[in-house]
Image (cartoon, rainbow, N blue to C red; front, side, top):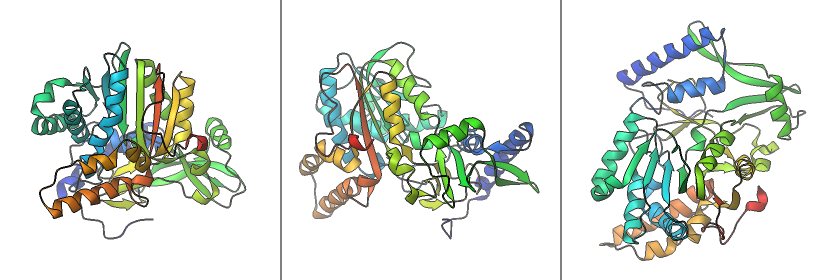
Length: 389
């Protein structure tokens, strides 16, 4: 699927993309003429100063390429503050660690809501590699909650020593580079990128033994006439690094994805990979590298396995809509002061976008993990779908 009538990038955007193309070409040449898709995605998203997440262009909100739940409405953070404040009561000297803070909107709204409850954490850590995004986050927090800016500390990696913490990661895992593969004529092939006529071009090669074993373990029928999907090998190491950092605490991971049985079902034989540019989806990953977001859905069974392998409990798994309703979204909406009927209708529409079927409420899932807690993390009291994992 390639969306037609994409907005034309500006001359400056095209120039920046071409610089990234030259970096990718050099990487291909040094690799012997071909790189696998995972490597291409890493370069396209994270090449210093040129990649999508490190190149400086606005990614979030109406003027960007996609809108996250915190950008849709402050209702998201206000509701999230309910289970987070309960955990702050139970976990001594706890901190909040946020990955992928985007524009800083979630951090600002969550800190403001926790301040009203008199439940501020010891420290609010933001893990952010991009200097440009760090500055954007600081500007947002300074604008929305200037008195809480000193409460926030930016890091490029997790704290060295173990801490008590509540970890929040909203739309982080989907930005991890993935391997892409296909089953064709009963063989497994991996997708990569080469240079043809001075242009980047996608091409398949025979999968190595390691990838073949991993794909076979997914239960995909090799007799399928055609099957294309992806594999994220970064989830387990990432989860492991987080769990090793936490002495006592909880983790909320929010992203779009499925349990493994649904992810690799025969019905989903075209995979989940897509690009996004100016709120349009693109199935053309080589289109202006560095200007489009590249993303794939999450195998939440992989997340659950990583948690249990590293001594964490899986306390809940449900849709974002169920999680927000369990966490008091309706009450937050009722208690939100409005000055006009139009404003009230806007609030109701935001609630629907965040929570309803067919909107973000069903597309996004939430998984709750914990260590050292006597009770499950809040937010999964009704319609907990752990049995699907």
